Image 1: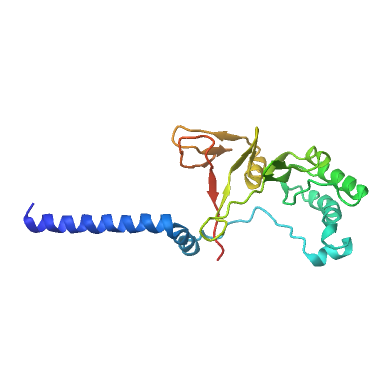
Image 2: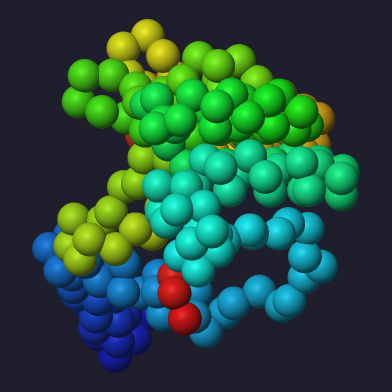
Length: 226
């Protein structure tokens, strides 16, 4: 290799090393990795696919006949039997129901509706001193409990990922969406560590980089807002 070729190679290697250094510093201190992720997900969004789920959002206008936002339990008790007639594979309720409601009758009606709902997944959140779990009469009707603990990024407080699992004491909960997915497939969550700390749910692999600790946080990225 001639002198000119060596010089060109050295220049190229120097530029490459500089680019890597800039990228590392930017990602570490300025959150450029998050910005890059947002850019790519907006410009490389997957093609439309066949919808397999429905979100039932109960707004304030819908809650008015039930006495406002405090009537969410009565609204759920009335709406869930209607949903059950469509024979859904899974029904997820993303509302924390850890406290007694204002009406014992409404709570009883809701518990009855929960018990008649197939493959029900209820939500729980992590507190500083334990789990904020659904009331026992609600929890006993659920096929699974999933956590809804968000993990906003430190740079801009935007939630780009959801922890696949959360540990509190001796209790581990899988994410709400992951519980729903595995119930919809009629499968269990299988963990493997040979090539990482990934999961397999009914033949659908979820690869996750292994950090040398089974209890290290494992998260799944979600699309950024358009």
